[in-house]
Length: 126
Image 1 (tube, one colour):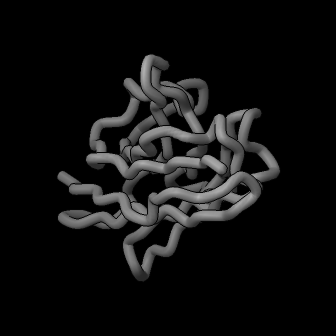
Image 2 (image 1 turned 60 degrees about the horizontal axis):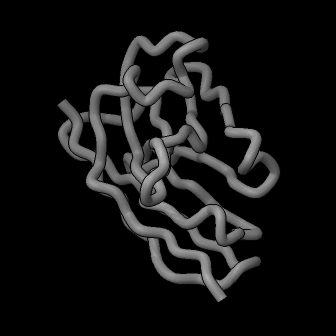
Image 3 (image 1 turned 30 degrees about the horizontal axis):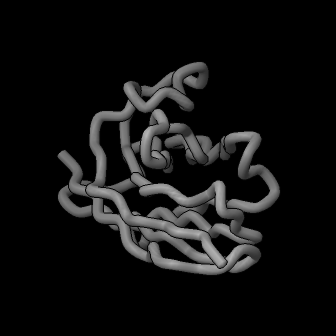
């Protein structure tokens, strides 16, 4: 079992940056594929980025590619989402999720992840 806690959300202006953190307890993130998802009001949850267990391969949604970067610090048992050039359409609750044994074709599917954090709000507005 792993417990996940997100932090780092807030209110920023378009073009600003934020770094979200997902800190794990109860188990090492080395054992899991860890992803970020987001959900805006009235919209289905969508995949943002993930870092695959073992290989460390990175995957991004087209909407954030080139602006967001996912990374992992095993020593701190934390996964980060660096978000640059934020846009109003990035406004959402951001969740981190962890799972093991996720095949590549399922990495963008939230249902493939077993453990979820409580979410952190990101609001991009002028």
